[in-house]
Length: 275
Image (cartoon, rainbow, N blue to C red; front, side, top):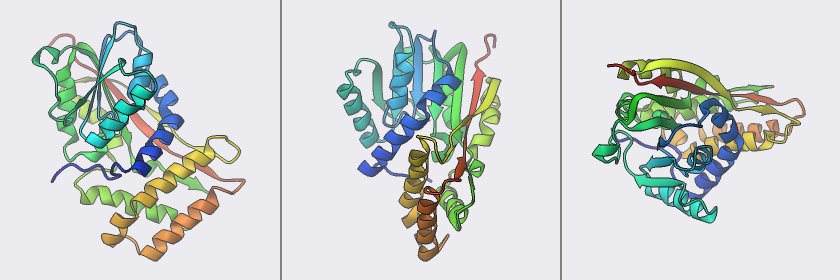
């Protein structure tokens, strides 16, 4: 089965990704803690905002290579880098995550290989992590950040929203993907021969009264809204119930006591220095 990004690459989806990047990039940077690396690989860079954020943290002589399979996403990444006068920060390349467009001389040379929100969208995440392992030098870092969709919690729970959420992540299974891959990150590192070093969760949530809260709920609304056609066509939930859940989520965002919790799973491994 061919790998599929379940959200697509429409202009609306590009706007959603831009909002999400604003909400989570700083927390992800703190977990990643880039600094001394001179050669960095970002796999599945999407629209490139986080790639450029990584690049801004590195020494001037550093080089960042970013790989993205979707030409529309990659075009957006290049356009945004140009608009921000940061075109020289990243070498954007089109290619598949499991068949990285790297020169032979680049293999085994990277100080850091990173991917975020990619493994949930591929049928064989182990193959992707294997290519990342091959790309880094001995002693280099491999960092994986991805979703375990079971971590979402809303309270007071709006009627039907969690049913809609479960129906949404079932569309991953129908495409041959794993909506819970986040819980497997350390295992994936171990399976390719990396030495697991650290794991954590990057918090992504908030409550009413926080400046970011409306954006966080809006992101969830857009994710569920974008999956409506797939959910309904697959008969995972009726159209009426799904639409009612979206209305309930909109009402939830206006509650003075609303709270949302979500965690992005994060794991780091090291390629053995001696092997």
